[in-house]
Length: 321
Image 1 (tube, rainbow, N blue to C red):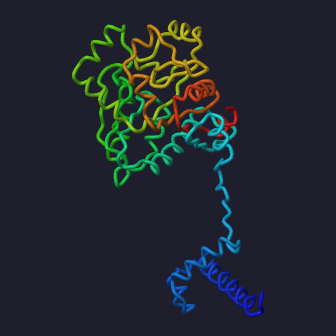
Image 2 (image 1 turned 90 degrees about the vertical axis):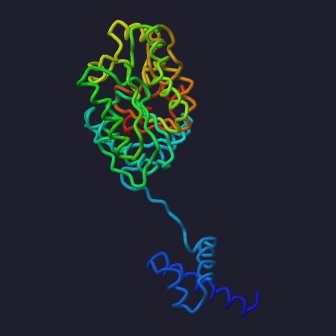
Image 3 (image 1 turned 135 degrees about the horizontal axis):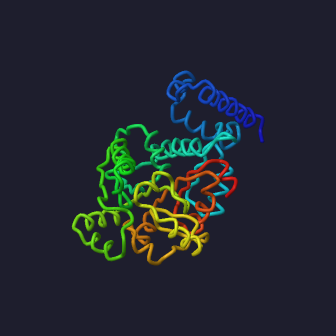
């Protein structure tokens, strides 16, 4: 290489370095850099790209506090998830604090990821989903066109306000139309279920279920939460014993599954008024919210059965998984 070309290369290197420092360290806009150095803005842009190519500028991603990128990657790889979102909790946090943390994490994640054209299904009796709704901020522009209950929302008066609040508040926060399911989640027998499903209003709900693009669901253990227990939509103690004997570990929208994720079919499943399993599993994006030691087996079963595509949980549960 001739001395002239060496001097030219050194000059280019100095210029690239100067422009890179002005742009990246001092925050000067490209147009201002061009005017200051009496060169074109196109050349500024080219030299910034070249500075990255030759290693003058290097991008380093530094994880923010309480962000668990490696653990999220491991969960995604191990269970074939599209996305795992892990929230921080104190080591001595109780179940209520874990629930609140997951709810806050889910609210932030979903606020940033709604498309505006989504049609969202939401489970009716989940305390974790309610914790999420309570922590959401109003979106403008809207986050979705409609929000639909995924299972029957009727129950005892006190408990039903919980179910209605999930749907109504979520719809209001994201600017969507609410679609209620005005029947119980569990009925006496399959004949009653079939009769209710033939009603015109339920036929319309069924249509909405088949058009959903996102589902937001709690992952339940076999032992119901206090809200579900008092709602009139929980299985009896004897029925829960029967389910456990059949290998049940958890549920999503009252669809009971085993440790390997397989559906527990039979008389109890035939009494549920909820989105059919096949329709649920066709929803492209299925977000499961759950955490805490009591939910580990249920979450693992949901992951093994591909019931969810995205998991939002706490760090201790993620480590256990």
